[in-house]
Length: 207
Image (cartoon, rainbow, N blue to C red; front, top):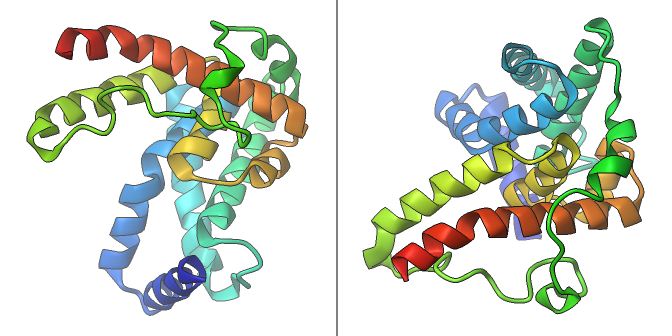
C-alpha cells in the first residue's frame, strides 16, 4: 500500500510539471534502462537513443497513465517496446527470446543452498552490507557490481537488472521479456552467480 501511495504522490508531482521529481525519477532508473536497452539493440548509441525515446514517452504518457501497473513497471514496458521497435528497424538478427536458451547454460554453477525459495541469495555476499564507516568500500563495490552486470550475457543482464536493480517481481519480468518463469529463474541464478564470482576478489582483498 505504501508503494501505491508513493507512486500516486510522485505521479501527482510529475503531472504538475515538478522538474525535481522528474530528475529524481531519471536518476533512479536511467542506468538500469540503459542496461536493459542494450540487451535488445546492437550499439551503446542505439541504447541511448532508446532511453531518450523512453523518457519522452513517459513525459507524453503521464496524463493517460491509468496506474494498472506500478510506475516503474510502466516505464520499463515503454522501454522494452521502444527497444524492440529499434531492434526491428536495425534488423537485429537474434531477438531476445532466442538468447535465453544458450545463456541459461553460461556461467558458473552454485549450490542450490545459496538461494532461497524465491530465487534470491539466502545470505548476502560478505561486505555488501558494510557499516557506514566503510562508505568508500561501498562505492568501490557498487562500481564493481555495475561493471559485473554490464559484462553479463544480454539475457542475464536484463533479468538481473529488472529483478535485483529495479526490483520487479518475477511475473513482471517474464511478461516484459516474454520468457517463461523457469527460464527467468535460471537466467537470474546464473547472473547472480557470475556477479558474485566477479565480486569475490574485491571482497577477499578487503577482508
